[in-house]
Length: 132
Image (cartoon, rainbow, N blue to C red):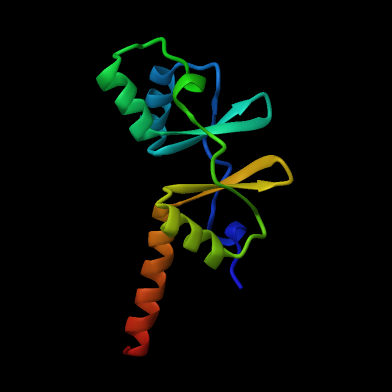
């Protein structure tokens, strides 16, 4: 049984709740990521997506808007040992782009739709090798 830990992106890029959305967007572009867990100190308080940041820029154009004002509070969080099948099923059912992976309360990774696509690709390659 695969777990979230097995396929997560470890040590994800994070952003502080008191940072500006403009700073978050800059860091997302720089790191080539679409989701950032939002921390207040070491505590997870939300998630910011690239879409959230773009929407703020397009609608409000407010360069000083804080991450805490636009983040999604209470993101989908799973323990590192969570069954990957259940994580993927929940993400698909709820149409979520990511799951934040924790050990206890510490953020240790993120599992995104891109990670899920890599898993799918691996399975398709294996099926091709088997001639299925």
